[in-house]
Length: 395
Ligand SMILES: *[C@@H]1O[C@H](CO)[C@@H](O)[C@H](O)[C@H]1NC(C)=O
Ligand SMILES: *[C@@H]1O[C@H](CO)[C@@H](O)[C@H](O)[C@H]1NC(C)=O
Ligand SMILES: *[C@@H]1O[C@H](CO)[C@@H](O)[C@H](O)[C@H]1NC(C)=O
Ligand SMILES: *[C@@H]1O[C@H](CO)[C@@H](O)[C@H](O)[C@H]1NC(C)=O
Image (cartoon, rainbow, N blue to C red):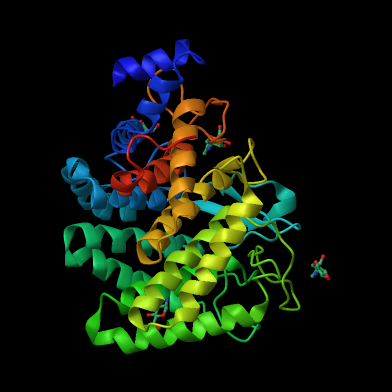
């Protein structure tokens, strides 16, 4: 393995066989990429150095996703879950996020906010896994649900239940349904609303005594989401709504094409309806067509995606993996393989298996816990279907 990987760097064209073989051992590569991710994990804070608060919820989820398909990493994952549950909520990063006039999100740490943006900065009010942003809360809720799925530990599920109670406080904005993005009520966007749908649907399948109430929220949320027009005529989801509650034509980010897929799969489990999976497949296919080039997923921000944008692609892959489990399609399998192989062959540091933002390469420094966990999501999706992909997918 190691020999093959090293060799692929030096013998690019003549070692296509060798480098493909290495790139196609998805599970081993995911394990190696996880070791790299964990060099940024701070046991003191329970989150990952070099990245932010919501990104850390995604690091946690990614590790849970790998543990769900790879017993080799389960005990390492359990240690992370139990430590982060205690430490991260003591720590809770003081981050402020703003939406720029062109509907893009920017994150600032501490008081370090440019003065021209300060006036629209939403108040942060960190407490436990809660802060000023309903999307951040949704990421943590999904992370703890995944930790619960892997371990069966009720504490993790209860944490998600508590987080969701707070998300419900964001409901009833001026646009006739859904939730706000932030507690300062400055924006209604796709991501917070997809997360609200997804968390409610996940909880409907995991909290039997409250199933109906979560299901009611999720069903209402999906009806509303479709009516808002955030899903455009090409089945792509724009960033959010403008002040007239209409699609704002904001950037089509990969993560907004992703969270909805997992949400609809869970909603379909809770209350089967063929329209859920057919819409999920339509969105997934439209996203792959619009956002990939030569089989590799991209976001429009690359290579300068900042503190938030370099997390996005992995979220799409993670949710496409969920869709593949519920509604298998060879096109998705090929997409997992082509992204995982490209990351391994073209987007990896010469030492230490660091993975950076452009999955088609070149590797750009610095990688960090955000780029690493995002790329790891793609490796995990391929590893989850290693048996079907084999080691010989053609490129
Ligand atoms: C994380 O950052 C803190 C503060 O800079 C540092 O003390 C700690 O050693 C770092 N931990 C890791 C695992 O990098
Ligand atoms: C959210 O609502 C619950 C109950 O409805 C309340 O106990 C809690 O304090 C609210 N949270 C915030 C941040 O307002
Ligand atoms: C969004 O774009 C569509 C098509 O280009 C256009 O018809 C519509 O007016 C735009 N909406 C907004 C809010 O800019
Ligand atoms: C992580 O790395 C990416 C790519 O180099 C960079 O754009 C981003 O700002 C980094 N994030 C942080 C928090 O430094």
